[in-house]
Length: 171
Image (tube, rainbow, N blue to C red; front, side, top):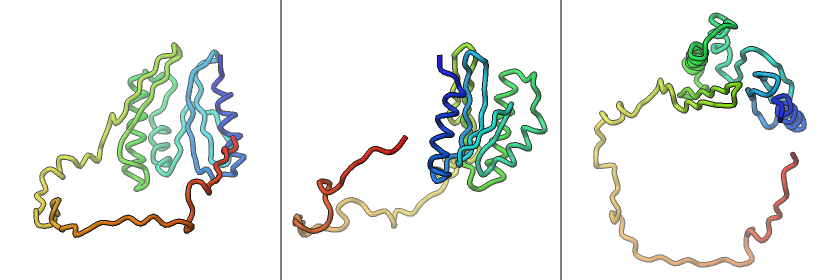
């Protein structure tokens, strides 16, 4: 059976090879024969194994919530709610932190629960539905008459797909 630390090692080696230019700050979690694991992997390849972690531009606000409310004996429901609150803190205190909350629970028995868009604090659908837009700015099909159309293929100019050599990325 694969180990979580093996995935962590593969990821950090790849990130180290590119010296941070991949710009991926990762949180890796999983369960294996040794139990649950949570790793943070920085863009330049350094790692840390922690009981909780945050990465990204909203990580300071999210970490403040974790540091205030984390305890080792949290139930699964309490832990998911803590994660949601910490992500929301990152969203509301940092403009670059996205606009919704996704969660993933990985259990030691191998089952998982994905919570896609389980919290959408900045939902604007209702607001947009209430806004009345003028029909004056909408251009309907056929508004501008097409008098003619002609396609002339140019040969000997520019680059075509035949000129491109595709090589595999180093992994």
